[in-house]
Image 1 (cartoon, helix red, strand yellow):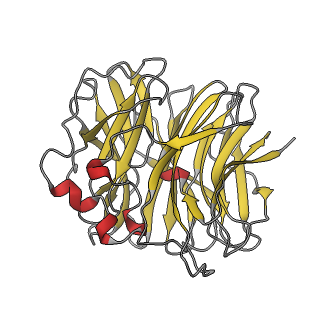
Image 2 (spheres, helix red, strand yellow; image 1 turned 135 degrees about the vertical axis):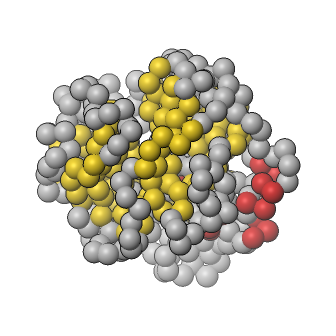
Amino acid sequence: MMKHLVVYREPGRFAGWPANFGMWSWGNEIVFGFTAGYLSAKREAGFHAVARNRPFVPMQARTTDGGFTWEVAPTPCELPGGRGFSADEHVAGALQVGPILEKPGVLSDPPGGLNFAHPDFALMGARSGLEAGARSWFYVSTDRCRSWQGPYALPSFGYLGVAARTDYVVTDANTCTLFLTGTKRDDMEGTVFCARTSDGGRTFQFHAAVGPEPAEGFAIMPATVRLADGTWLTAIRTGGRPSPAIEIFASTDDARTWQHRATAVDYTGRGGNPPALVLLPDGRLCVVYGYRDAPYGIRAVVSDDGGHTWCPPLVLRSDAGNHDIGYPRATVLPDGRVLAVYYYNDRPDGERYIAGTIFAV
């Protein structure tokens, strides 16, 4: 059984990119973030038809019944300078958060004393841009995202720019590993690495590069799980030659070294799309992604051997108006089904909205 649903939809609005924000779940109570701006007044059919002279506002959606009904409100966190985050590339300079971060005191030092094992804990990554000069920070919550503490600055880890999108693995109360994207040697995004705190969030250190820096194109937007046998798996969005894909990297030594394991998806459509990786109750793996070629829609692939091989794509839906879709987040519901959320459109000149799909694999 498969069910499609609408989480947030408003005429004239551009709601997008859940993958840039995060998703957190406690059984049937699930929260995820996205951002809401406005469509271009021209309503052109082009890619990312946003009104760049109007702000994007971070939003948060919550369900307590496993995804069937939702409450949506602005994300309850401090916005640096009152500006949105993780969307600078989509707005004019006067609305970007990047310049605000040049002022002293806008971002606080990490506080330490965080209990990553708290049952209601959540961490959210945030960023300004994508290339050299991009800065990143994070927020934390211990009340299931009803309030967020921060913003707390992240180091640059030796990169000229760091783009934080929420991807982390908690090892114990004091230890958390963040998966981030850094700039390449040409100052462009991106190459994936992980950083770790072992002192409750007081300090973060570079831990390892996840795969080599791409010679061409980019490797960005990791999605990570840890298997029962201790293996770490990260799904990464790649772009450039030979085609936009989703690659799987694995580590068997506590994320210190990484090896390429498989190509989960060899083509995700024009421009590519990030993966949402989840571990199913029976040990299988599922990657959800947006497919940005006709027929535009949302797809998934499944592995039953620890990510070494992947099934042909499962088409969850193929009714989108154009390729301005995807950027999913996903979680497993208590009954074993998968809930995926993503941004979508019905026609090229129509609003971009947040939709979801509940499905079994």
